[in-house]
Image 1 (cartoon, rainbow, N blue to C red):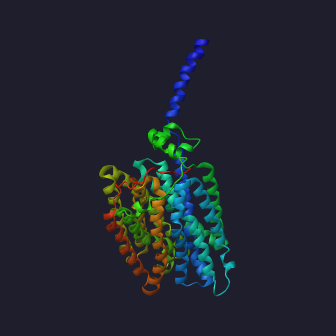
Image 2 (tube, helix red, strand yellow):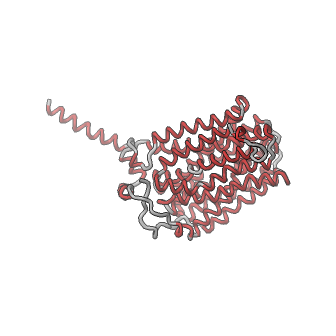
Image 3 (cartoon, rainbow, N blue to C red):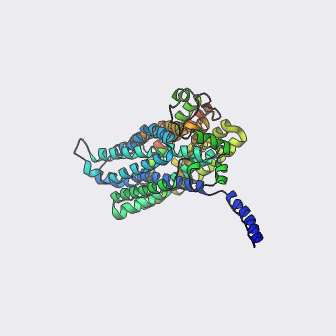
Length: 459
């Protein structure tokens, strides 16, 4: 009997060990939540673009006034990128993301109450909505740099482009469903209900993120050694653990801002963002006012650029990593950007000058998709250049990009008013070419941390 028990123990131990060799799926859960967070962020950004026509008609707001309302979000978004990025490097993305989602969700709900805060001719309904949307932008500013930090901590070096593509995929999925959801809610319950619904969904996601996520893979209670080894080798984890309890003493601003590659990222991303925000703010209104679609048709067709974004961003992230493996970080990231900025303006020009809606709208959607095809290369390059300070660098890049986002709706509104929709899209196509030229000055293979000293990360 004793021999049988001994034999049983010898059999059971190897089976248990073999089970432990199979990686757990915690990282899949983390990036599944990243996709959901970005989908909710897209919902809370895009809801005004869809409900905007109803608001504009109800309160007799001019096209130029709507341009300023749209731009207010991106002003808050741009200004608060760097503080949020520093916070993500300093405290980690877990707490930062939770607080930020709750912050922007609360103010999304408050947008529905905005007309009650109008105080007459000096503080109109447009001003009230613009101020609240500014605060929504302040909260959403945390999402991108925090996700960049998540990729730096949860993805190995060969998967950074693919990791950053999940951010675009989530945004794309949110863009697919937002027009339909917000248009349906607005038609049945009014535009205010659409903002209440958006804010409640965001609050639920914040709670789920807080309960499931951690800053580092090593901190997660459900992850096993096999999955940790996939993310980072043991030696890297040991080095990271030794730095875990330290304090981030300074950001290497001088080193960062003296790099030609960093400035190439900052300036090129500004041009890249200008084009996207034309889709983001004006596409639904363009389809209705510029192409004569009904609200129902417009809500369906407005989803098409985001379908293209979802598919092509995922492909672009994957190809960016494959190109890096074959050509190195310098040419690998660069070539991915060039493909995107070559295809996007060409498709945009053709679509803008095509009268048949069934041909034109898919072309315009594909242009938006190729705009996002190259996006993971920008964000992955931030990790390539400064992996330990990636949230701060990506926040600075996104801040530059979103200052262009502030200008985009205002400039587009001016051109629409003076010259028409087609000329506004022509200018957008021309601006889209600029990032490809500027990327001649970006070298993602540089190691900007070589002289920075030891990094001290999230506690």
